[in-house]
Length: 328
Image: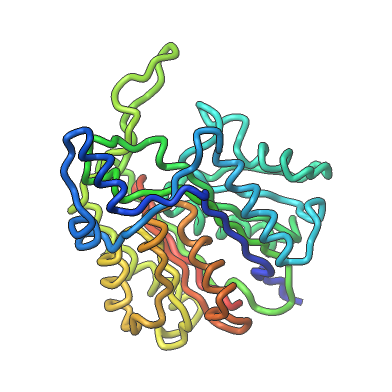
């Protein structure tokens, strides 16, 4: 009998501190940096974003999202036998202990379940879902907690108006379980390291000091051009692998980076815009957290329902990109 992996619960969390474009523009003006609500909305579709408090870490955001996903799945923490957490902003310098291990401790999981981080930047969540899908189909694990969590506000240069206005903090989570019913229908992942320089944090740590910049750098036009191209291709690859057409997709849940990239992707796929879940206006770009945040919102407001076919896809630094086609 074929074993599938299926999403059985979703959850998300946004820090309480919400910053509108007007508020951010006023803060930047105090430093002599000019921007405006119109400038930001026109170029990105973003109106507001959430920032973590100084005491909040990625694991804190992940914990809240995970607890909500577990509740939705009607599970207890020790029912989970694997944690995969996607983040580019881990709790600890150097990335260890992994933020997944920190979340395991905070959830009170004591069953010895493995926990690991995945680093694929904005594609991290679809990478993590693909890994979870493979573990479940292999029979190695039955209930996997998959999380995307970020505090990107910590790596933004607030003197660079082209990047600091785009990103926010948040976390989203799902529980994937072994099922006899089709759930994840196809996954496709790619990377091309030759494009790593167009979206990166170029600094490195040397003898306790940062060599180079510890802030995010992005070549916006280059990222835009590449993103629209690869997102269309990888979505079609996933559909082909599942022997399906774009018309079979009930909802597109793309990485919430830029409304123009998202609209361009939907147009290339031949999907009407009303089939696309959009949260970028209120969340900004939350990197690995953006897809599970959008998915959870659409599940909880009733748009995405059991039986619906959902295309999730992301593109991020590395350069990485990927897609997951799933039946809810």
